Length: 357
Ligand SMILES: *Cc1c(COP(=O)(O)O)cnc(C)c1O
Image 1 (cartoon, helix red, strand yellow):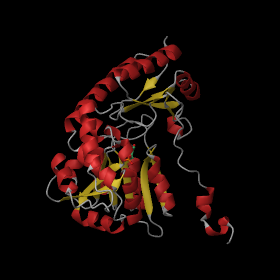
Image 2: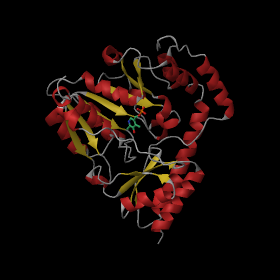
Image 3: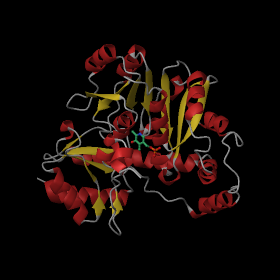
Image 4: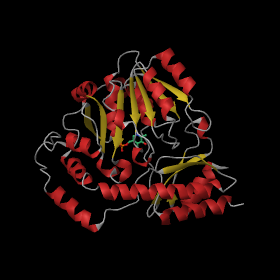
């Protein structure tokens, strides 16, 4: 056999794997926007039945249970929308990117943002254009419009609200980008449940708009259930390249269960939004930190020294995300997932210990 470095692409040999943080034993995990809420015992029983009935010996067929129609009904989507399911929205980001991966094709993202847009562009040999937000993480609409005109990217990703900043851009500005974009616009609503606005009602109304959602941030991160809503024409193209069995029987069973848990999900979302505002107000009162308004289930905070802050949390057995070094605009920023009231009290205690006047 030839040496691996003559077989495997040099860019892959040089790349780093996506780092999933190690969670120390007993650590409160507030680094990855997971829901803090466990299913009640009654629901667990229902879930156990659904899982026990999953036909594991058969290949999964998304069409069998008409998940598309069920999701459409659950999200009140219009007639012209089609939906494709993905093994997490991560998988959908990958295959949407692949749709346009021609020589010379470009992907645009609004930085700092979700790293998978850039990583997938690189994976498929596409140029990635990162257009920075303003220092307060608001959209630099003029710069984005200019880049769209100059570079005509095949795909524009807009995380709405954005990760890792929590910012939900001004809707009218996003509409301007959608109208001006010569290629596909993927509005990634991974945090849509926690947001005051959504482009889901516009899905299917124009071919260039794809709206991405996921169950991950609302209690099902372990099941890998994402979906993309768009026009029938574009989703039909995506179906040609998605692996035919990308959703496994267990995740489809979990999806069936999730669709019966709307009230539980909505109650938890309401609780987390309330907690987010409580935490936000408390942090706003601390002069030494700057907390950014968020419409996700997390808060991004600029502190005097992000590494020191991260370590202080770890010393209290709480894992948060240190964003320092990820992008220049994230200088000394940390990101903290909203947890239960008790979790958030612990978070505030660490902040108070470090930064109370
Ligand atoms: C978490 C996240 C995703 C990935 O969600 P999965 O469905 O778990 O793959 C996609 N986009 C953004 C912006 C996210 O933060």
